[in-house]
Image 1 (cartoon, rainbow, N blue to C red):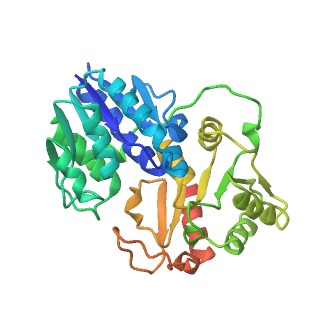
Image 2: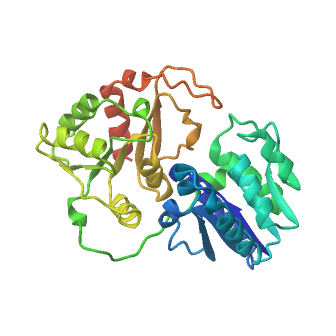
Amino acid sequence: MKILIVRLTALGDIIHSAVVLQFIKSRIKDIQIDWLIEETWKDILENHPHINKIHTIDLKSLKDELDISKISPLYARLREIGNENYDFIIDMQGLLKSAIISKVIGAKNIHGFSYSSAKEGLSALFYTSTSSISYSENKIWRNAKLINDSLKIAISFDDILKKEKHLFFYKTGKAIFNEKDIDIIFVVGSSMAQKNYPKEKFLEIARELTDRKISVIWGNSGEFETGRWLEQRCERLKLAPKMELDDLKRYISHASIVIGNDTGPTHIAWALNVPSLILFGMTPPEQMIETEINKFLKSSSAVSHRHLNKNDVSIGEIRASDALIEIYKILNK
């Protein structure tokens, strides 16, 4: 059997979709799994032993530049992918764009979320079969449901709790960091300012973690400035070097614990079976599944899974002292 998984974006969602690969491979030994992803995020899946081929497209530039001349090359690219003659396409994105892309690529069987289950219900019109599961259900479990229904296998909740790591990286790379310097990692940024834990509270946590090395990872100027602000106020805290995705995976793999916002790097820790504490405010904690070493704290605000409140800055309500309690519990396991 030859299948194509369509999950284009975003970083955390791709990570949580990829957990199913190990279970597909263990149940269907001769299956070939390909993946379609936005070019920007390709490196997160590089080196994965269960992915035969990673196909990429560049929808982002088409959207950003509003260049209709790119539509024809995109269509040709999708038809080229369709020449792979897939038995199954599984759309794990649940958006109208991903459903149309799946249809253009073409397969006898195209599976996705039902009208009431998808983020964009009209996507269901382009599938030959669908899965029904509440949109407010845990995202990782929603992914497992798609795979179970389409491929007729049984991934259980217990399987996910006992998962093997499901991100991979080159064993050696450029010497941009010393593994011995990595201990506790702070993730201070995210895609939205409202999701970010206050830097003052990160500082409270850092000052209590005596005799521990702390590094701040960053990917843009705002995160760099937050890290620099912290570095200037806590001598044991240092900015990590600027990293590409492969180096970031390798860097996180050496951490004692990763602490931070609901964003890609904290979910990388979950995927690598590295201890973590994720802080949730405006977004639902159903973005992850807790394990013995991966925990979360959520503010008191109610969250609508379909309609996030962009005025919700309740993440700042989470006390640094409560975070420290969870951090020590995880470190002591």
